[in-house]
Length: 142
Image (cartoon, rainbow, N blue to C red):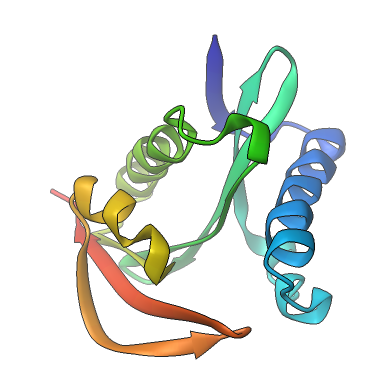
């Protein structure tokens, strides 16, 4: 069974950061300075937990009527099992609870399908971030 919720303590946050490190720094060769951008202390960190282990994470940063979703990462062993979709659903519920009118994110272009299936639409031009092509996406919240 998968539980998706906010990280409850420093141990869960550390596990979430480890998932991010493995996905971004180790697998995708993102520089550590880009991955750890100094915003984690003011973010709400969501985690997906399976059998007591954090296997996926993302963070939410409020910005007026928008919540910015970033740092979506799923452990290699947990991919293609709905973890990212479950995190997106929880992120949207949290954003609505905070009174946000939209969620915005910077999607790696190879993950566009995931976000499109969840109702996100692209805007702007493709751009490079940490050597990886991205596109801005948003979802309006009712």
